[in-house]
Image 1 (cartoon, each protein chain N blue to C red):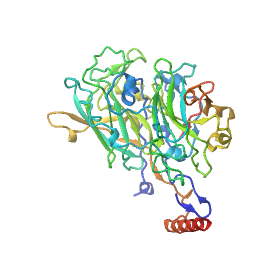
Image 2: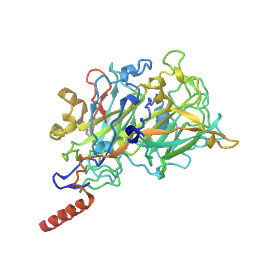
Image 3: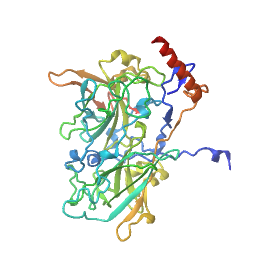
Image 4: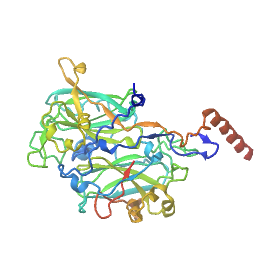
Length: 213
Length: 271
């Protein structure tokens, strides 16, 4: 046996393929126009008892010539108000879990307006790799027809300028002008929760920063 | 999380995922697949090391799923059986180091036997089947195993070039144990003559990786006088303990226990 054969083999990850135009059938059948599951995964992450500030995230997704896309599916993954993820790998000290918050949701862009939205809470800060806190953020995963490998990005908050300025991930982006593509703008509305507007540009001027995670 | 006597409490995840090998996947820009041209980022992605944001992911519970969610033959039947060839599809979800991915959410969707999707945006002339929905979902078991039954989907033409046909396929979305394992792909069927001509499938950069998307007919799981079976295994990103960075030698569990006791007594003294 050669030395090479003694090494633990690494198998290749299964190749990705586009979600296609009919992704709603599988992941959001009600948006496709029919009702099949009793329990549907959706874009409302909170119930009455979830702890934290209620917020709404709204935005559109644009292609390389500024067209609004209407067949995109976006998932979000975030920590709770205390800054803890509902997952066994998160063992941060002193941060309680919230049994009314999983922190995951799934939204479709509207077939007419192209707007997607999430009803959630503002996450707390999570410890980063070096123990320094990461600025509060929401992880997003974007799939659609024409996207061959799901795109990962992070949404940060405009009212967290100080934390954002110190965030290790934001500071990895050497082109300062591009950092702004990750900051959702807070808008107060007369009624209802604050809205954070987060538009995603797949290509061209103002292309959103995507992460290889 | 172990206490490190030099660094104090360390916050890097104590297990992380192997770097994604992007040569396993289609490039974002695949001009033969025309829709990718304006939907593919042009700038380089920013590469991140794993933090808690990447190694965690939603955890699903079997109670969230319905009893028929993995039976596409029955889960939308109204007044009879759907039309088409009955098949079983089954396989394992492993990570790149060969370990089973347990409790992974596997979601599948497809068109019916005539190549038509039950979707308000699908205008293909192929008939809808009143007894077929075309979606299902399930969780892998402790061995990473999943199985469902369905109707074999038909091929269909699509607007790319005017005579492009999609090979018969079933879409998959898999949610593993970490956010970085999230994967969307498509499963094809052994022997389909449309496979070599499909611009979407041929955007996959190697023969080996294309083969990985083709389910094989699996006689060992035929249901007698009922259904043929296909086997489709899935590989997600590998997961391993991190070396050195946060598991320094002194962070032996016994020493950690000692330092935890010291921690506690120090806290006690303050009280």
